[in-house]
Amino acid sequence: MAVKNHIKKQVRLLTVCNQHRSTRNINVPWIQLSGLWLSEAGFVQASRVKVRVMQDCIVLTREFEQKSQSYHKLQEILKTLK
Image (cartoon, rainbow, N blue to C red; front, side, top):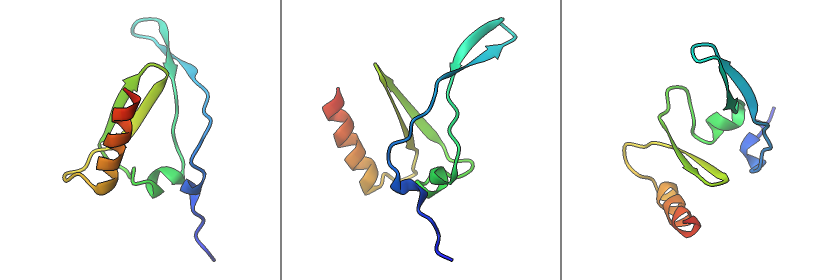
């Protein structure tokens, strides 16, 4: 049986929900990411993830000991977004 490539679908639509924080009695925005596509994209259990937040944009990248070629390519793309 062939292994399905889950990262072929490059765009995913998620919904921002609310999560209640009982310590402060407030609701905060919450997004859940899960699926086989995460591990296929290199986000395996215990991976360190860097979160970059910009207006209307969140970028998640896996932290590497050594910077890969795809990491450097992403850095060039991010420079054009600033």
